[in-house]
Length: 242
Image (tube, rainbow, N blue to C red; front, side):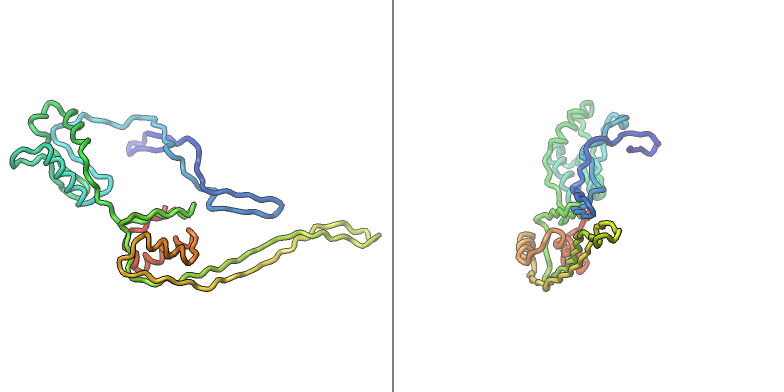
């Protein structure tokens, strides 16, 4: 449930859970893909109590969901271009998260109309370079703003494979013994040779993906490589793991 600062329940979650993984197996053998014990409920919140909605006044403060100076200034410029007259400004960016707006005298008694026109303005938001990684499903999303500094990548993999087979042990005739199923466990270790790729200054996402695919990297490998690139300072973007 979602509780507000007043202790009241405003929403509860209900709906199908998307896990992005599964477990299958039997008789001592099991195969697991991703994380089957965690998941998400898309659009699963059911509103139990409406949030307070006071009537807007002549002075408004628009709060950005993602604070950014460039976006805040662009919003103020778009509002002033639409509603300002002469040298009097209607909107100004107070900080990267808040834009203060004062309705023109023309809309003093028509605030809903002013808000309707203001919300239809088009503003291009400043998108920071970001890489979003979902370790549960192995999904990676990278924007076009992501850049890579000159770097050399060497990557190898270590595979440990454990196999269990079952054999039947038969007792000798007239020995009084019983038939038993005996598990036979085999362990194999395989380490691939390191593969390398070199990226030049200003490499793009397309070049990064092409280079990593060329050395046979899986999504799990790419996640590990991105984390190491970020640690080395070669990934010119924010790395977000969800």
